[in-house]
Image (cartoon, rainbow, N blue to C red; front, side, top):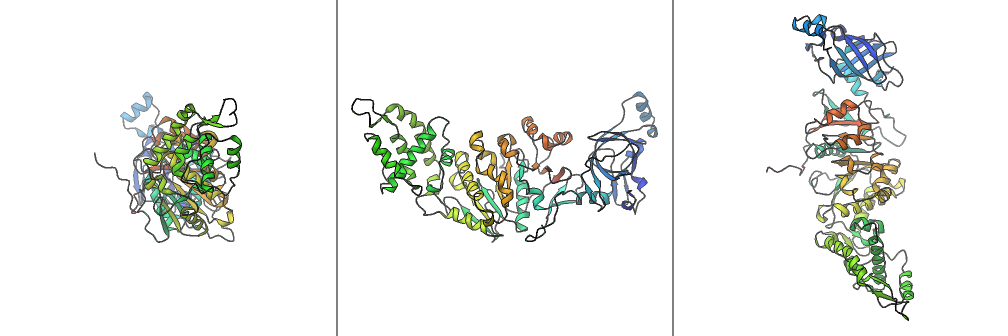
Length: 547
């Protein structure tokens, strides 16, 4: 196979650079015949600028056509070369170009990964014209678009962005190429991370792909006015029964330490559950002065259905848990109040009081089944085919432990549903690092997001996450991500963490990206793609005020 059929209008010799002179496992080098071939020029509608990097070349080989990307251009720094340049004798200067081999053309005239094949010494190298570049761009997606019997062929997300090196060419991609192994958008503040995220969500909504959006700040509150996007505001028209929250989630909410606070919190909730069952919900359960057998009898009477309690009495109950067995003779079977334990428990009691006073948390939780609208709405969303759901959590101050608990609860609730009761959807969580940094390695390995990252794909649940720093995302979660959209990063630690997704040349470029520029890397793409994202027309409350 040769390149003639791709250069029908213009003689391909006008695009000729030289021959392959060195072949390595990772890349190859081209010996350019003379410096004049690197002059920029325009031939018909083709603009050639070969004296730089990041453009494509095509190599004719006996195995077929290879496409490569130029990562290095250099001229030997010798006296002979310098004298030839000074005299204007550019025909005596022989530049060298380094190229990365991207793909090899198959019989269907699309490029695929080269595998064990590579170019050979003396193969001719040409600048790729627009027709070859278009064939390469059409070959970027590795995933097959073949649908099963009960599925439609996926429509691509049209004009998602523009290619950075080809401003006039737009980038379109199938949803599964982005989300098949989950998508993580990374970038420092004001790098364009939220803008690109909204652009992707805009295309998903327009393609009638379901989205579950959890917005902690309300910046997307008016971004989706469509009738097929239902809006919920936590603490306003969406509530959660206290009985639906697990003990580990309460610990996440109140950020208990690794010592005794978790056990004290568990005992306090259990005591309040007993009082609520006994129709005494407005009182704390007093253990001091009671016999051990009496307390054990009371608490053992609680069944698995007795999950409701009065949340507002929790701080008082924690102090009531400051008891231990009496050491006085004749009273060793009784509980007695101890100031030492009360002082230790006061830290947890004050922490919970602070949460109640400086957030609208108590407005979000309800007793019994009253107000369980949130989970009912999640149930409806899971069954529907096209209706998306937007959850505004800004009213209750969704941050730190509160956000961690709520996202963990919703994630676990969804992933535990039977696969047949779920219609495929994308779960969007903005600034995910805010909800994972309070979990230790033990708890994070069982968190809802981790479970979705591991098992969600089989059930049609795909993660769409954003973060300012990948260092704040648990490694176990990051290891499950197959697609990264990387905006500007400057931290060496962040770059080191994602180095397995990037080649050496791409790592150096990330530091210098402008706002809106990003590098898309995925196991579902033939090659990393440099993109420019334009601001969406949708309303977005992310403007930086002038100082």
